[in-house]
Image (tube, rainbow, N blue to C red; front, top):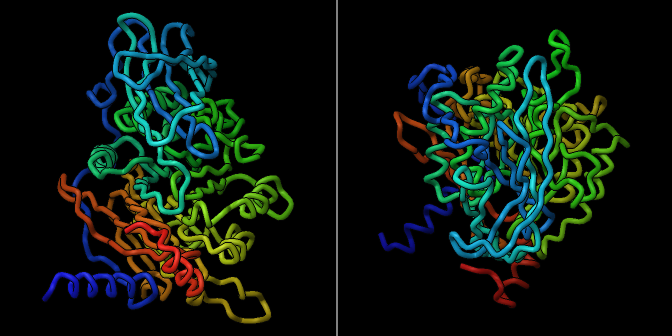
Length: 469
């Protein structure tokens, strides 16, 4: 078979998976490692050598359009030196930025000195080197800024959720770092430190910060919060929700006119990414509801054609674990997701993998009786990636038979990648951790909801010749 014909067949098969056919429930059984946290003396949690050496280094996007980063780190001994030196050449730092320092207590735990520094005014598509700390204890890293905002800018996102700090978590992290992903979209439940008591809660936040540093110090992780970040623990005297998370993981929420760091938006390359909080109020007229209504009107599909939403609790899920927990958010926001033609919605929470077809249930009400989701070409694809590897283990019980809205599901650990090629197409892969190997398991080509599904816009695009290959 000629190569062109073979590729055409592949595209047709993959598109049939996106647009609807018999769903697949994988029979693969994951048995590799027990779901226990890695011991604290393991080298993956190693504390950097030197007095007051920076540790737990991570970066996130620092503005709306990708020309800034927020660099965060912890020093254990002194609050000294919240500045970042940076430049275009290794070991030659032409610029500097001054940050802030904070700390907090949690039960009997007292955190180290937590530093956050906004580095802005950066150039697009440029590699920057940066240095934090002083003297022999200083440490050096680098990051790459995204291409300028452009509808055909190619970019690869990794998607990880419910990670934790087990050997399975390590397998997921190491496989992601080999994937070519340029930025992580993290869908909540970071450290699982709330499964510990008293001092150990903070200690396990520190170990997790060191655990993800090999990736998070070199590329942005776009954070969203899950239920394990709430940490409402009145039995230990802790009643302020999200206390550890908000001290450690800043977000650029004010850049998108949000009043709360738990919900915000960023634009990166050809994508507009909206982060929602499943565990904050979102009913009509609440701050999150008002913000999302406004933010959706700001989306410009001529500049950022790919519209992606992150949340923690999935809206559509056919696993017995956490079944229907996203229903209240669905009733509030689903009609907006369809009206504004959201491309993809990523969630976590359920410790398994599942991808839906494009479906909606926006016509359901008590009197109509139309209670089941139906195919809807304007609806998002819903993808659950709560399979990072945490100590709670896998959610291995799916509803039987598989609902018609479910395209593929499997109870395994892994991560996803979304390779945006241009304004019309993106390649999506879910990669299973299998016996220490990274195994591509679920793949599909997504047509963009705005450019790829409208014949008039496709004809205009063809005439103008703007799309990349």
